Image (cartoon, rainbow, N blue to C red; front, side, top):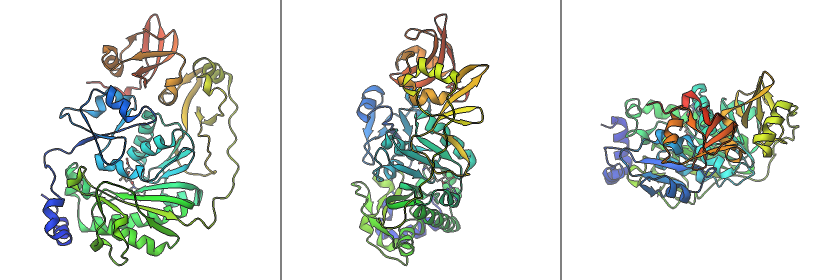
Length: 451
Ligand SMILES: C[S@@+](CC[C@H](N)C(=O)[O-])C[C@H]1O[C@@H](n2cnc3c(N)ncnc32)[C@H](O)[C@@H]1O
């Protein structure tokens, strides 16, 4: 059953196309996975994962998994950060941003982190990703997901987008606004989205999206690119939002998304400010995903860029870290460190201007010093475990892999005594400590496959 307001509106806008555009199998939404290029190529993933996969048109890393019993969270490669379980059409917007290694990228509405993971993979560890989430609980999930995906150059923030503008005016080369929306593309996947839907919600979301977009305009550097996306079909949040934005921001030009999937926008959804809707993109439910809207905007290259600033002073490296890194992560031993309370961090090489925002993570959590010993953090192994000098190497069909993910001690076959990284087919499953031929399990309890 669809919300009355939604159905009446869509029938009026689409006419005879209504039945076709909202035709989608009503049973189960397609299970999508997006491969993490920080870990492997899509081709390697397809070869190794042992899953029936169908490539998706929305991005080069996206696949539909054609196995009814597939439980993404239980697959060892999920734990190894090789893929993100993502609704197929949701994989489209991040790829449109054309992120290149070395850029400064902002994801303004980032949790739970699917699109941030894609942006981080496009950066390939070079440059800076700022992943911001307004809701504190969701920001913690975002932090954990980016850690699992092995992201080393992200700053995870929990902030209001207006506060971001005060801290980082005209700073970013690329911005993604994946706006909180009325979720009309979620009706099949989340019955709650259907139950909560009404016209007032659409208006409220459009107002929030408008504010976020105005803040994005101020955060983007001259010549920078902004992608706006929603998973809804409502005119006020899609074409209408973009028309209004262009009218308020003459410094922006709408450009072609370059997408070869989905359909162009709809002229009768523009509201008061018509524009060339062939430039924006829609994915309707009959086109292989639940539904998305995307627009790509470029800011004029004249105008003031970010003010220069002095980066934060790095912490003095302590002997415990130097000894540990020298033995297990020699490539990291020379990197500057920051201190956050007891925690030592390896910050991204591109710094953020000084600010007073709530930081959930800055770069990689390296570990802490306890009783004159360095105790490594899980994040150190998810981000850099493939370079660890001591490794316990597992494969998908090794029975020790499932035992490890349950939190059990396993037999050591390739690692020597001391700290080691446990990997499945090269994807990090965290840290272990070897002694007496056994690997003691340090995989965080909260992440284990306990059933
Ligand atoms: C569509 S979701 C983002 C999904 C995410 N980009 C991903 O791909 O995993 C929108 C997010 O915006 C957040 N949000 C809610 N109100 C907000 C506001 N006023 N400003 C910024 N973000 C907000 C929500 O908590 C939610 O996490």
